[in-house]
Length: 171
Image (cartoon, rainbow, N blue to C red; front, top):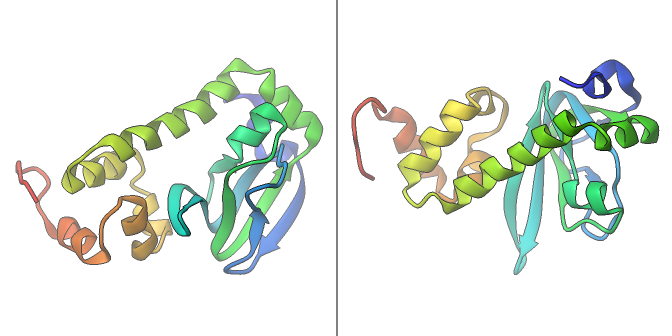
């Protein structure tokens, strides 16, 4: 991991209450966030409906990648879904990150994984992908948000969680 991504290199801290925003669509947001504890959702609005792109929870990094790379207004919202403590990178460390190919690769790969999740058609396959990639997600994020992220109802997610995933099942 890039030394610029270490939490020691972040220069300020904020505590968000459930429902608070770190940034909204239209903001220029060019810093990186490290989640100390709690949970946030990164989403876009699609015809007034929230489409969750990513979660940030204890030990993860999150940003408005579009704004970070272009220095233009973001299309994303970053909102706390429970009380959350966040470290904010300095502008200097964010600039250093943008010059570090490994740091950029990590951020881009995270967004690519979400793209694959969106293109995966079967609910059970989306669930399996996310469970394998991010098992901690299911401990840190409330189920109704995970269901929305996976494009399924909370009831469908509940049924999937009860299945023996070693079997080849169709839902």
